[in-house]
Length: 432
Image 1 (cartoon, helix red, strand yellow):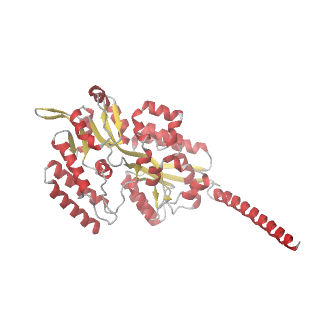
Image 2 (spheres, helix red, strand yellow; image 1 turned 90 degrees about the vertical axis):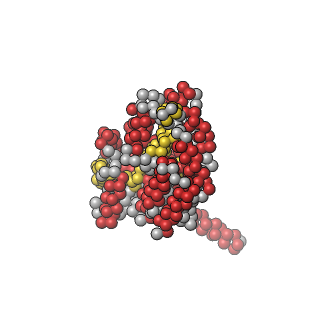
Image 3 (tube, helix red, strand yellow; image 1 turned 45 degrees about the vertical axis):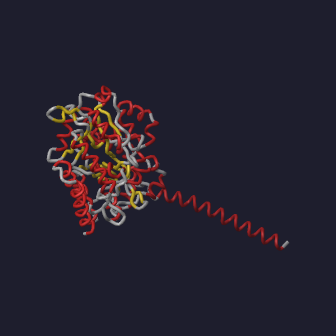
């Protein structure tokens, strides 16, 4: 009898504690959600880098948000290019005043801002408001995170693509190869070489920014910066990749574009049917379509061991030194900017890619692909868009790399010797 009483008391106690625990958990969830709610009128500023041609889109989006609720008032402010925004943000963070509620940032700055504590950790906001972060895809999530903390959200995202003359491709009966190893034969098929030299280039490789050819190396297994903080650009895989690209260039089927007007010259050659394809950013799709008198196709880069590519464009963040009231208001606006409907508006009107996987399932997403079928190659590979390499010496490394390749491809220096010198210079920079 005594034993039964004790057992009964224990069971009753466990039930009470269990009930209290459940109630506490529910209360915590409710409290967590309320801690990010906007409870009184707040005005915030959005710093962006969208140039004049996007003024109407920016105004429409901001007005749409301001009219959708009555507590948060947003004012958009153009700061300049990404470099100008970075300088203004770093200065405001150091001063602790004059910070925007929401700020745009070029993708290479994400790790730097995370390491410096400049950007607010959005992870608890995402959890509390049940924001569907997974809809961006693992590649974009990784590219906007720092040490497993979601410190920004994908905004106007681009990646490297191969634009090609689809009208010419249909006439020749060819398709852009899926494999890097098939590129050499393919370029010979689509190039036109006359008695005075190349009349139609198979492709043009931008030499003014390593981002455009970087993934050729990464997908061929090259670790541009190793775990021991050295470069693998003098390794076997890298040398073979360089020699392959050099063959394309020396046989007249590919062109390595360098110099002051390299970008505009490359675009003009493509527009004038003097190049079958060019490697460029996906954000310029609208521009190419408007200027070309032929159908423009878009292809994922030919793959090797892997078929990954790197993120370009910009992200959105909330500066960490803002007051909690401003952060809450900013989070509300940030969700709106990255919502499915607004994401599609950006995609239609700016040329950047839709970042949401689920938009393919919407009527608007289906209509978007009907109007821009070339974007399907990006939709199909969203999870393969990865963060860019982050290293404080990256700009110096990239400059040495680009200049060295230009010497090899254009001045025709000995590749093996040039690679050794290049790697030595890069390692000195990394060790400094």
